[in-house]
Image (tube, rainbow, N blue to C red):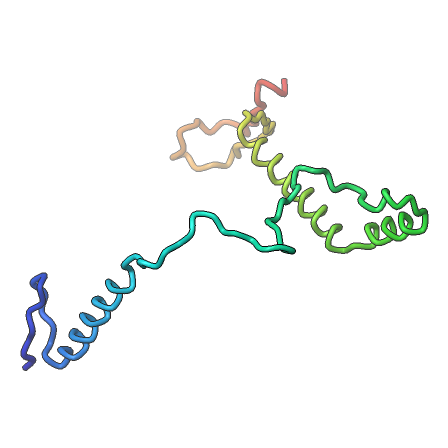
Length: 151
């Protein structure tokens, strides 16, 4: 029979797990200490000494055909050849087309659909059918069911 240790929330833990419970309590205390804010001074602005300077990215500037500024036909031909042979770009373009097609299918499901299913049935009742049927036994009977749309 296990002796139990009652924890602060009313749950009981077997006595063999007391060491684990103590270790967990210590871990919780350490975690609390680690989450306290540091009191080290932090400057409001970082000063950069020469020759270093703060970066100023120009993400808004169009990159496009950057090699055109050199006005070199050989470089332009090499860049065109590299772009045409680039498999990564081809895969990305194929995935883009696949995503567009998938989106078109998803959009198409939002619209109503119209379908038809014309059919014709023919049935012949035998003149030799048993007398227990609901139809009188006189002669063979033919019956054709044609939907009104096909008439």
